[in-house]
Length: 188
Image (cartoon, rainbow, N blue to C red; front, side, top):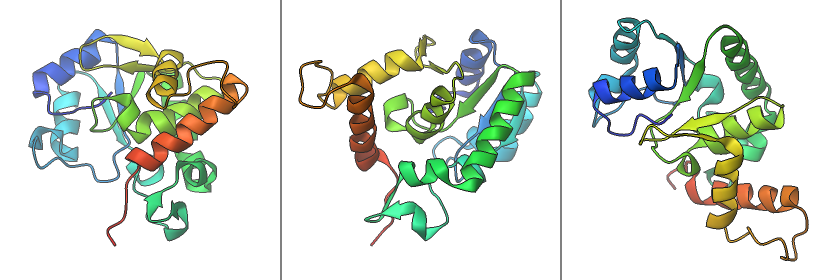
């Protein structure tokens, strides 16, 4: 789920509508200058008031890695990040949380295709065989497979007759292309 610029009550309604009982904050910097109610401590307190747990996992699962070797041409490289030990440990923590709660990974972007929570975290979870769904700003909940269909369309790789063969190959290329478009870029 992306907090976007939702009012707090709208965001909590999205979570409650999806049955979420715990939020895993995967933002590297758990603050919002536009919506201070999404700052780490304020959000944790507000969620607790609604019986929703909060865990900050942005150090391990955030989209702005601290390590310089996690960047390619100045842009966060989700392929490299996905195999890093700290990411794998954070993913294991998220999976463990999801075994006890109906957990939502939260970042700021409304559209899953604009956010590492889908392109990195959601992808890794889905590839590991976990059921992943995305809570959209409308309240609709869509499967990760549906989001991947949208990704293929957005990257012009939806047609089966393209030179890139299988769906898996086309998806891999679509993820790489989207990563280059939306991943965090270091200032030069």
